[in-house]
Figure (spheres, rainbow, N blue to C red):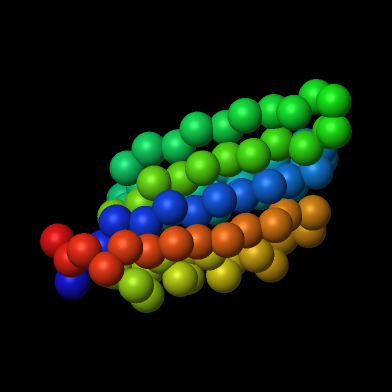
Length: 83
């Protein structure tokens, strides 16, 4: 069963990390419903929220791969609501 979830990503300013995130999110585009990024110029970090709709395994796989990237901090929350 598919679920709705949110993946929160915080990254330090690093163009290579941003590119790696973009490539990874693109490869999981079939489960991404929407995303929004907000840069914080004062602290030099950016926050990205990604809304996903997929199985627990798909969402966990994306979250795990994001967590392995350098200078990236990630957390996910999945609803109990099944689609």
